[in-house]
Length: 285
Image (cartoon, rainbow, N blue to C red; front, top):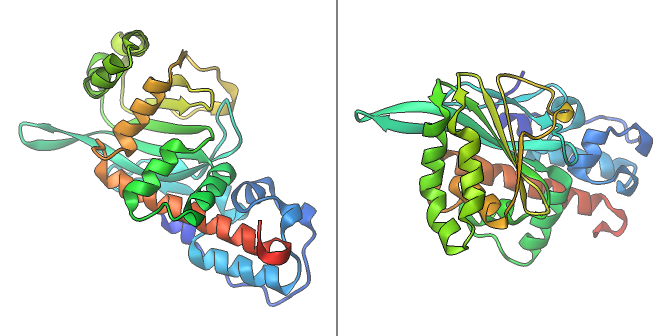
């Protein structure tokens, strides 16, 4: 099993046959990552471009179904493909570890992965790239925040934490923004949800940023089929959604090492959009 960003770059030898493969044979995961299969050109050009995609690091469907992303610092593994209770299949674009200083010693608290609807996000990244938007990691992370698709942060606790401790750290960063927006009530709801919870080691917390500017929150004690659940809490607040994601992906991220992984994951998505465009008839789209 391949882990980390190597999962994006897993390569297999390109086929020596140039016969076209029927579009119907492409899996749903491939369509989600490389674009609609009905738009893929057939023949040798397609074979060559798919081989180029693998060299660039674009994940292929068979790989996606079995691979995980291993967060290096904590060893936590996240599925490369996840289906949550809302949105299409989502891709993990990277992960990092949140640590805190205790008596001058860094203590790992939780691992956090970012999931996005890959095809939609890739298209938006492509548009921004053609507009000359990208210069560095911050630009890619900002695009991930801005992207008009469902996105989610999945946190896995690597030690026992009181809910009050967990949320207070987030509240400290969120409070100034929410006061400025006159929306402290949304932050109060978010805080109240966690106050009486005991987040034991292995607990999963999913924070979903919906396209209607609603934050969905779900907490489960371990691995779960997220597609079958109902969110424990939903708060309609653009400020809270954006504020939470900027805590992780913004310029003063609480997981700076993860930002590098997320920016690199965004670049891989951008590569997949380039391949999608090149494989369309006429080489544009």
